[in-house]
Length: 289
Image 1 (cartoon, rainbow, N blue to C red):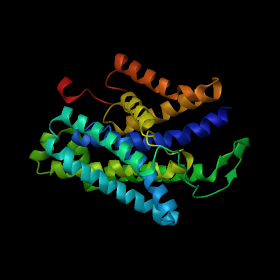
Image 2 (cartoon, rainbow, N blue to C red):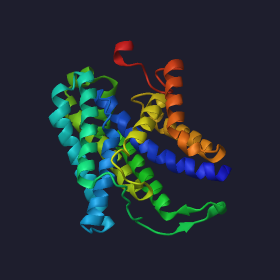
Image 3 (cartoon, rainbow, N blue to C red):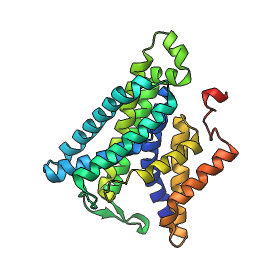
């Protein structure tokens, strides 16, 4: 059982980290709490379904194309709906909820409320230590891990990364130093949406697709970023692993544990908000400093 918990905890944690890191990135750089973040995850899963099933494109073409399309949609939504009111954080929050609901209804209209499935990119499985792990799981974990490494390299080794971290630390000082804070925020949104899209296309074969599939991941992401610290990349990564291991432990040790995942996430979120509102590695919001 311990080996099962270790393997599946790492796998789930990697996917959760993709979503949580993207969510924290845009909050850190632009102070946007993007509740539509997991809606892009859903859109990417449906996009790869449409491109692969309806248009019969090979996964090698369908997956990158889906990621690019969803990223462009995310940037378009940012420029049209969020950028004009970016300084009004409450209005932006409401806009993100509205955008997510619009996406949900569009998916419902186009694809219907029926459950959909995406064929695995690779078939077969291995059985290390008696644990059956599909190659699709391994591929997903590998792509997600490489994506997280790429984001870390961008943030730490490039001029864009320095600009994003400077903007996250103090937007006013970054603006006074000649950085285009608006353009940095747009670039960060593109990276954030791309991370959600990559997660969506890679887990699509492992999920049952339906128009409300963005809601549960949103609760998990909120719990993770509150646990790790809103705006903290390190906190998001560590929080994702902690929540994933707790979730997998409950699933393997408690009868009906699979139905308690969201309840556990909510319990962790509420506990952290009461005991340590800034999370493990985050800071209080600007108005509370």
